[in-house]
Picture 1: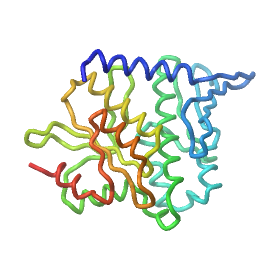
Picture 2: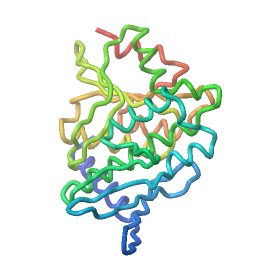
Picture 3: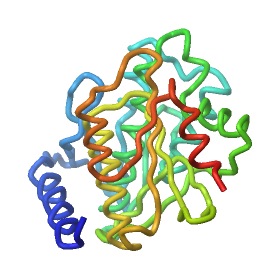
Length: 258
């Protein structure tokens, strides 16, 4: 992909974002409706309150309350720790009342808003788990498998893109032989929003670091149902190598190769 084509894709994505955001203001807060969808196909909303010279962004507790309504309670130490690990990767706090929040200044507001939306999408991904899998979160399954196969990796890294945004990746792999550094995103459920977000992140980082500066992988959970073929094709169109959990040995062979 030429740099000019990549730039057009980034501009198109940013235009889609701008057109999809809507604001409503009251005396105490501003409600931002985003183009990103939750598991019910409802638009994700953020609440912004001014606190002195800073801005407090939150989901008003909706994300975890929605998980609870769908039968997934974050009521054990292991589940709480896993949710907090997800949020820490985006710099998002879990408040005692269940709200997901970030604090921003006018200068870093776009990045903080971006981080909070990504965190909400990542936590909502837990909602599609079958009850038998509630105690085994998919990202942890991937980590455990890589350890079992003795594949060296590190968790939760952020890379800067041409747009100025920093993008979170679940796993990273050091350069091995002829293969450059690599990243891996794990998806418990492959949705359109997830595929779009990952494709944007990978392409944005490539524009910043160089077209062949790193390799991008995706591991898709297919234990409950097969992923939509069009979404897999979208990942592959951006040179993101997608692997299914049922065929995970292929990933271990590739990332563990010398």
